[in-house]
Length: 374
Ligand SMILES: Nc1nc2c(ncn2[C@@H]2O[C@H](COP(=O)(O)OP(=O)(O)OP(=O)(O)O)[C@@H](O)[C@H]2O)c(=O)[nH]1
Image 1 (cartoon, rainbow, N blue to C red):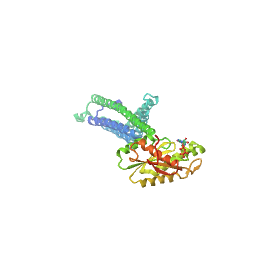
Image 2 (spheres, helix red, strand yellow; image 1 turned 120 degrees about the horizontal axis):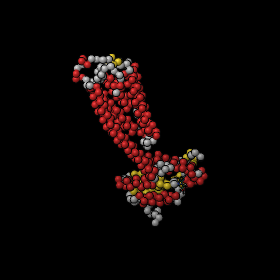
Image 3 (cartoon, rainbow, N blue to C red; image 1 turned 180 degrees about the horizontal axis):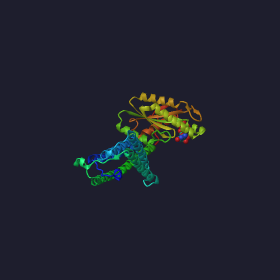
Image 4 (cartoon, helix red, strand yellow; image 1 turned 60 degrees about the vertical axis):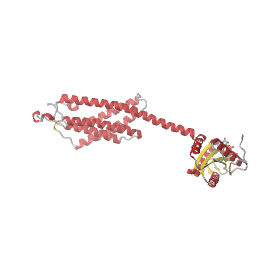
């Protein structure tokens, strides 16, 4: 179009193959650049590759288009100007992509900022293409080549051919635009879907975990135990751990310090259980440890280790605490029951049995020694 706008003393003709090739490159390159940009956008802000594709496309289109002019006369462009034109189109492509990204992340597309970014992105790309065009063709001298010296089939009459080419290009661009609008819709749906999945996961984490210690809560424990019951071949040991003397920490140093201690004890339990079992917090200073083991002695050793670790000294922000211990009652699946409520109740009864006999110890549930509350 710009070449057409020049005032020439003669008719300019174009090599049809080269002209079509430059249009094809423009269409394919722009589509590829946008697809690459939009897919990258899903993963992060990477503009480099799409900007390279856009600038390579614009440069190929421009220089191939120039080469398609049959009677261009002397045409020479210095290396410096070629390099400058490439830098200009690359930088403007980067800026255009950044502005497009800013526009796309605004949810309300009629927002004044969204319109500002949309307009700025368009103008930036127009400026980039214009700069590249003028830098890349300012030294051209439209000479006149006598028509009679050209093979007849090698060129087409300027006006009709160019009109046809521009019309075909417009149809292609319209198709790409419609595809792009649909794709944007698909993209925002995809982003919304991801956001929804993330929020659902957060919600699940919140409903199934204790907010203070981030340990699984009673709900999660119940689900976990039910899953274990269906898949379990070994014995399952359910340890009911209740801290001894915890209330004193709250009473003397306040709830914040008590919270701090609970977090530390949770970490201690997690570290000492690691992959041997599962730890949950089901109440104030009550924890459950589930261990899948064939050997009862191993479980006794583990429970003793937990007692020793819990009785460690804790360095807290306000004080150090060295008087905490724990009472641990243990029930066994399937010996003591095969549902969560019964097994937790029996482990709880065993734990109270210890509490009433001096605390800081472990015991298994015993049908004869202990009585279940009715
Ligand atoms: N800081 C803090 N305290 C809590 C939380 N939940 C419950 N508590 C407190 O924990 C205490 C638990 O009571 P107890 O188990 O009777 O206290 P204890 O001193 O360990 O008593 P024994 O088990 O008989 O040794 C209560 O004072 C509750 O208010 C919590 O999330 N944070």
